[in-house]
Image (cartoon, rainbow, N blue to C red; front, side, top):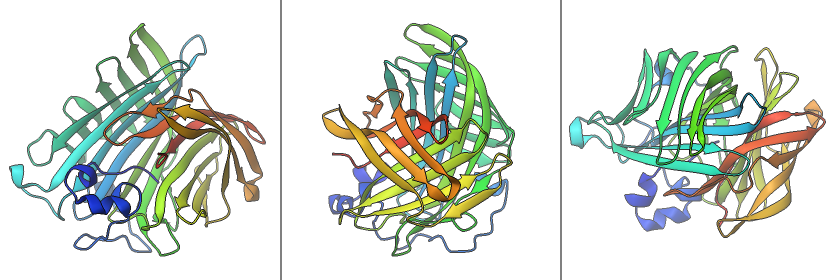
Length: 346
């Protein structure tokens, strides 16, 4: 489960904002809607799906420098449609925006870019793969071998990524249900990247290496009207297994959850709502908000019961649409590193 389109804030009626977090519960009339039993086609599905309202290419990475100091990296490109379909030049209904961030134990640096579709400033091609906005790029001959760049006012990064495992499909073969009413998205990941390169920070250049996780998701109405935000975890355990889990917080105080267990060889098992549990243990005051920054996460069917700790509690994305996103570590039944995204905290 991932993020939200800018167009809902700047180009949609304000009333839409009450319909799920950032308008993601808005009715999908006129747009295509995900259906069960999807049939994916690659490399085409690595590219855009303009008949759907929202889509993202979402990369996070856990990194270490030669001295063992930890870092986190995020690079995300979002597509949001004002109407279904393509269009030439300024007639394109597609809006693009992107986020980039670097997190250390002491600092969190983030920036954003915006673009209109149809004029070449931003977009995605599937074969060869290239996702870009201005000079920010995620590209390669295919999605298994990529280079990554981004620049901001106070940081930059240049990285290479190599996948050593298969794509993983969430939910029922990539059909990821988000509510008891049946809202859903198409959702798959590449969680097996090895990544290395250079961070450019205010204090200088830092060589880093580690692991990365790419999420691909598209839909037209992925939330129900009563869902106000979510807590999303991507966890890579030291034994080679992985866990994706999220909970969607609902206005009646209940949660809708979904999770995927990923074995070291890429074999995956999807779990329905209720199997995955995430409970806040401690909060921090971040950007004037009380945000959970220590969690207890469990997937009892796999013996997972871990305490999640944030690398930097102040990893607040103070952008046009604010949210929390940053690297985490874990202890308990399993050890390892991962990423946490939290939205809807006022």
